[in-house]
Structures are given as C-alpha cells and as structure tokens.
Length: 299
Ligand code: ADP
Ligand code: ZN
Image 1 (cartoon, rainbow, N blue to C red):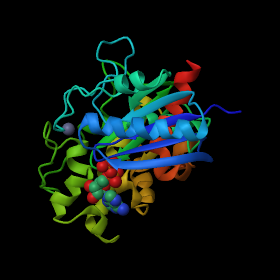
Image 2: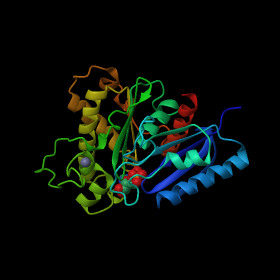
Image 3: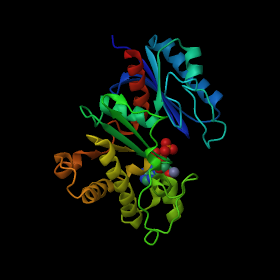
Image 4: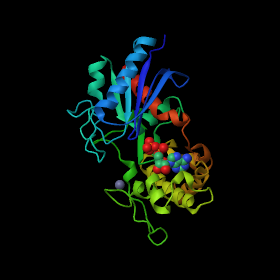
C-alpha cells in the first residue's frame, strides 16, 4: 500500500488541506479562510485527525506556506512565519502545533517551493532541473528546485521583489510594494493591476492594454531568472496567470529580450513548451504540501 500523506497549502487568504498519495488519488480536501494562526492551524489539525479516523494513519505531513518563513530545520525559528505585514502572523508557529498533534515527519517550505516540487514530481516540469515556479497573484513569489533540492539560502529566495526596468513615461504608476514601490511585485501583482487601471484584473477585457504591459513586466523578470538560474522549465501559476492569452506574449517577449543569447532549443524553438501553466492546475499548491510530506518521509 502506498503511504498516505497530508498536505497543506497555507495561503494569506485561505488554507487548503488534502489527504492522498498523489494527484490522481486525493481522498479528501478542505478549504477555509486564514484567520488567526491558532484557529487556522487547529482547523487543519482537526481535518487531518478526522481523515486519520476514516482512512488510517498518515505517513507524513507537508506544508507549503506563504512567507517569509524559516525553512531551515537547524534554526531555532524553523517552522515559523518571519516578520510579516500580515496582522497577527509574525512569529506564528506552523510546524510546532502539527508536531504536537501528530508524531510524524513534517515537511515545511514556501508555497512556491512546494509548487516547484509538485510540478517537478507530477506536473508540467517532470524530468526537468532546475525548475522555476512563479506565482502571480496577490503577491509574486518564486520557488526553485535546483540539483534535486529546493533552493534556500540566507532564508529563501524572494523573486517577486527583483528590480526590473520601469519606464515611468510609458507607465507612470509608481508601484504598490510597501517595501520597494516599483519592484516586480509592486508593478505586476494583482493589486498593482487593480490600482493602475482602477478595476480588478479579472474584469479587464482580453484586448485591454493592461495585458501587454503585464506580459512585458513578467517577461523582464523571467529573462533575469533565465540568466541567473538557467531553468529547464518555467511554470507560471496564480490568479493573474489564468489570463492564458498572455502566455504567447510572454514567450515572444522573453525571446526578444534574450535576443538569441541563450542558445537552447527550449528557447529558440520550443518556447511554447518552456514557459507553461501548471500541469497540476490550481492543485499545484496543495499538492506541493503533499510532495513536501513525501520528501520529509524519504529524507
Ligand atoms: P492568492 O495570491 O491570494 O493566493 P490568487 O493567485 O487567486 O490568490 O491571486 C489573487 C489576485 O489575482 C487578485 O489580485 C485578483 O485580482 C487576481 N486574479 C484572480 N483571478 C484572476 C483572473 N482570472 N484573471 C486575472 N486576475 C485574476
Ligand atoms: Zn517589493
């Protein structure tokens, strides 16, 4: 029998929990709003306890969570949310309450590292390494699998805050990042689109000028990530990426930015198969939790 895993996608607005062995075998799923850390973690614990009663013992748990967070098992702050503007969540314990309730291996990483892992394991990035996963939603974040491992470092990458060229004549919007103004997230996350154009991104028609500008910013950032990480696959998730008509625009702009400098057929000939949407659809996140659980069991 395959081991049964519990996965959590810990988002700033909602938590998704699932129990299963992989994408084709999800036995149960629960979604609830992110409220206080104590209440939110208790709801997750109650869900997994109910699932254990129904389906038997879990082999491991995994959490892909919004950050910043401490993913280093050797650090005293491992399993916590680090200082965050999100009220009540600075120092929130994510792993500790799970460990107290379940004596199990627990994987813990950023939501985007989790999604990079699940897309490499089961989704659009199988047999690729490095794998880059970018989410463009309320915020922008990036996770990467490099040489078989999720990329950490001082803390973990913060790819959403890279600085990209901003032509203030063409786009006078000053940017919406509370820390940096017109960083990538400040220019291109969902709330920036909404502030710039005065309406929610999902209500802007396909022919609106917003989408060419959005694709322009995404392509600039991806170009930098291609130069620095040399990923074999780039997966773009998040609500804004659901505007799938942007994908060919992004691909064309990335090719133009690179200007034949990176001589890989992935870029020169197969770009349509290089910058892609998640193979696991909107389950990439919670399956990230499941993949982190599997990794925790194996490590
Ligand atoms: P979160 O980042 O909070 O986990 P999402 O990835 O859904 O959740 O991102 C929410 C942001 O994405 C909001 O700013 C919203 O306006 C935008 N968004 C959601 N759905 C769409 C869509 N279909 N098209 C364009 N923008 C969208
Ligand atoms: Zn920023």
